[in-house]
Image (cartoon, rainbow, N blue to C red; front, side, top):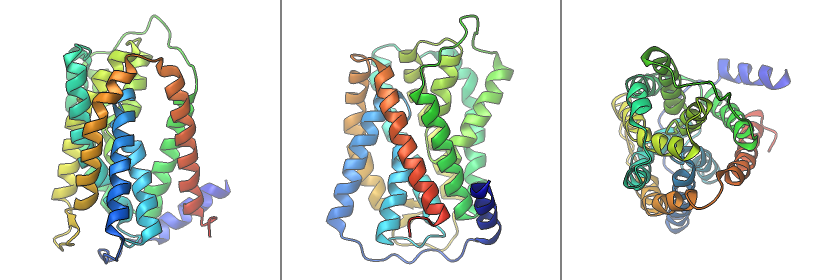
Length: 294
């Protein structure tokens, strides 16, 4: 209850201010950090079909927050927009590797795609107008929920089948909006959803990697279109140019390696470890929102 009160209070009173002032940050440290982030997120994205956004967004929060590279009002939006733009290339690299293995399921992909695009674009229009504390809190809560799902061994009912266009559109709209809001490729929603309808795990991961491309593309274009006209030299729209380049280099290299690993080891252990990691990240973000780390 205390957490809800604090989140609501901050959401009501914290408003967006001016665009950030770019402060000095050791360029070598930042480049190496983003390259490492790209390698790690690309590896996990290739293994689990998640695009890597659940790693990129909180990691950029930590980098920006510890360095004061951007002022806090704009920082969450920059992290989300940068993540989505990186995921276009990460997902493309992983999807190509999955396509060569003929693992993508085209029927559910086609049913989900239109609503996914609409949801992602809608989020990029709404999110920049929301208070930063609310954005960060929502991302933290979402990551915590994903952590619970990925750390458990739940199995779906064998009678469930993937729905038609109407049901798939409802799922796609929600997944697209969550993706655009949290700066992810939708894999954290799409993969569990496909598995829920008895899609084999490797096919669910492959299909999610493919769908991550248009989801991230729609969301990132929105963050370009709806950005203020005031130009920050470090940003294109809301996208951090330097972080984008470094993360993409690492993730494009690592994503095919992640796909290869996914087809040679059991995904159950990987998901449990990843769930623990997400739980730790979401806890840190909630602590920051509450101001308990000071």
